[in-house]
Each structure stands twice: as C-alpha cells, then as structure tokens.
Length: 235
Image (cartoon, rainbow, N blue to C red; front, side, top):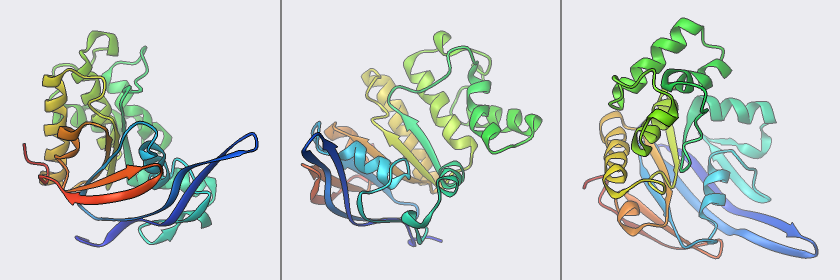
C-alpha cells in the first residue's frame, strides 16, 4: 500500500571488534522508508553508509536495535527466513555488477530465479523480459566481457527486477561508470521509481547522484547528521 512503512530502523548499532577496540560503524541510527519512496544514503568514505544499507536490506543483522521489514522484526527471523525476504522482497544492484563471466546476460538474470525454484522455461522468459525492459533486447546472449560497463549494470538491474522485488537496493550503482553511462543508469533507476512505483534505497558519495532521490539521508561517523529533499528522481 502507498505510504506504508516498508523498512524501518530503530536505534540501530553495528559494532565491529578489532582486538580490544570497538568500532561503531552505526551509532544509534533511526530511519523510516515508506513504500514507493526513493531514498539516497550519502556520506564520505567510512561514514557507515554501506553498512547501513547492508543492515536495512537484511544482508547484516544489527548488533543492537531493531530493523523491521514490512512490520516484521529482523531479529526474530531465522537465517532461512532472512534469505527468503532478500529473495522475494529485495533486488540488489552492486557497484561491481557481480555478474558471472561465463554466463551470458540471460543466464545471469536467471540465476536468482533458480534459487527461488522457478521452472527453467519461466526463468528464461522472465530474464528475457527483464533484459528487454532495460533496453538490452539485442544483447540477450552476450557475456559480460562483450558488454560495456553501462550494459553490464543494466544486466545487474534486470537481474534485480526479475525477482519482482518491492525494494531495489543500489550500492554506488554509477561508481564504475563513465558520466554518460552513469546518467543513463540513474535515469533507468528513476524510471523504475516513477513508473513502476519501486522503493529505491541507494548509497552514493556523489552529490549529483544522491540529489536524484526524493529524500537524502546524510551519514557521518555512523550517525545520521541530516535529511533533506532531493529532486524526486527528476534530471
């Protein structure tokens, strides 16, 4: 439903122990993400933004505090339940694409559907539809080495879309791209938000990239130091 809270962090800490020293990657953060919202998490290197994204997307459990996914406490979920949440609710887009070199585009997009035990013919159909949706209908059978950086990121986005997620999590999605390809990927992500109503959580350190979101959350030393409005996905 529109405007309902889909992800919430309450007084969340993530603490790493390095010998006798404790490092507070997250230090009492609170955030509410509503269904259909486009949120960017910004901050300098070491501010905790990627750790925050990992905790919000169930890749990591918080050391203290609570994270809720659609009203359910992450701390009460088993590892299998968390895996199911990631597989059904969240689609991931990474800076380094994380594509399998020996697989072509269709096979890379099919992979998360295999984990969901979708029949092979349906997997192939969904993968091809997702690739066509991101403008790669003429690159279905190309391997990553035969694609440009922007095209590889489009394959990664198609892979995220294939599982029909409610939330797309993007960690520095333009970080390894030239400015033209980066703009195209941002436009694609913004279109997913505007036209399909996807909830977007995006980490970036680039001011112009983060400004494309509806809401900008700024981190420093593991703490939220401010929030502000962005352009809402517009150029």
